[in-house]
Length: 263
Image (cartoon, rainbow, N blue to C red; front, side):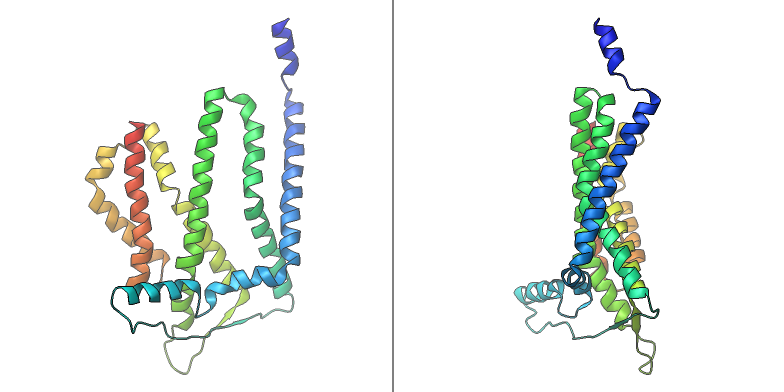
């Protein structure tokens, strides 16, 4: 009877598809709700999105305060203004819609992860479920840290450098809204992925490809690689390179500790 009862609870292939379909509809519904709310609160949304392009963004103020604290009282960032333009008739409206969708996905991401976990959890053992919850939580937390790193450090400094860079005094930059949003989205996603380094190291250690001894031995090489990656994804100035390289190297050190724990 127990076996018949268990067999009765097993879903057919069509049943799984139906569960998946309902899950996708719920995800689309929640994401759509977030996107609509974000779209309606246009002023707040774009104030936050455009804040990193301002010359007095909070990151610059904090850097100035830090420089003053260590004895550079006269250090100030110069004021700058970069004009953003829309070149097509529908570009502002379409960019508003696509940005609302992107942010809707980001806002709904905890719920999306919950739905995906609930869909997969019946196939997992109890210990695997607890293990999966921990891994997913860490992945999401690292992704959020990467997004914050991009918003507060990488993108504003990149925009300041690239937006004000000029080959001649006769040439002035006017940045399109599409270019601004595209660069913002790309850098944010990139940093969210880069911050998964400890999780990647954990996975590789589980598969037996790396060890803590190996990572420790190649610390100097890793630092050079990290600085090279930071130089590629950031403007070519020393301050930005340092600001990006430090957290990435800290992630590498955390990865070593994670791999040691796995061993």
